Amino acid sequence: MESDRNCDQKENVYTQKRECMKKSVSLFISILLVAVFVMPSGGFSSTKGKAIKLGTLSTLQPFMAVVKDELVAKGYDVELVLFDANNMPAIATTDGDIDGFIHNHLPWIETFNKEKKSKLEMLEPYFFYYRMALYSSKHDSLKELPDGAVIAIPNDPANLQTSLIFLQKIGLLTLGEKIDNFYSILDIKDNPKKIKLLETEISTTARSITDADAVICPAVRIKGAGIDPKSFLAEDETTKKFPVGLTIDSQNVSEVWVKDAMEILKSDKIKNSFDDLYGGALVLYNE
View: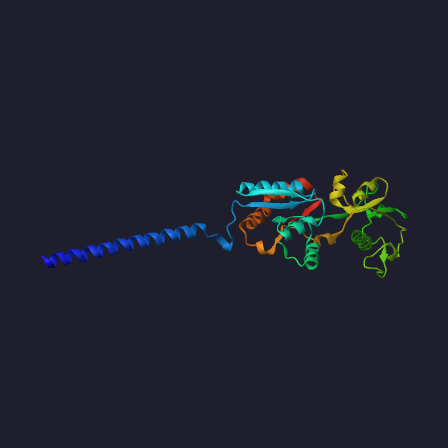
């Protein structure tokens, strides 16, 4: 009898241990499954459904509204923050007030990082570039420009220099040695057609097209003046070296919303919307 009792006790202990082991295994499997479901793919941290603030300026506001709608459809709470100064989205991203923006070109971002010691990163593939070109409402080709033609150009140092270099590349004038940090009209060495350059504030350059023989200005401003941005006499090809894309603080590059935003920007749907909105004034990099 004593032997039977001992056997029963041993069996009970064994049964209890077996049940404990079953529970432990079940608990381990449950934890493992939870970990698998919450672990983000590709090493991205989980930010699905987070609130995102994206900066924009008036030119790109219509397009950014489309990007916002696509992110909302993916489950994000998105707010567009409209700025009225060219450098403000970059400053706000650096300060952590917004999560990112699409506006400034890559060389501008690189200069900003050096000056502010910031770590903004423009993600690849880049999305578009701002077209700059020579337009005319009076002439259909460069050859038609008469001697003494008046060409309106932006008067700020950077765009003035860009315009002069552009005019040299298309054979309308020759520049000498640069006197100052930027080329100016004083640096023109040879002007065989006696071209007259009318310096204007960049926001009014496009409107000069009715008075001048031609204008050099951003195509987006030409479009705003009701002119087809693809109807240029010559395009400044150097602007293709100034890409624009989604720019964020580099420490956030692994967030899921960033991956989702880049997938949106690569889609045919978003590219078609972009072309419909800007009609060639801003040019996609896949064209």
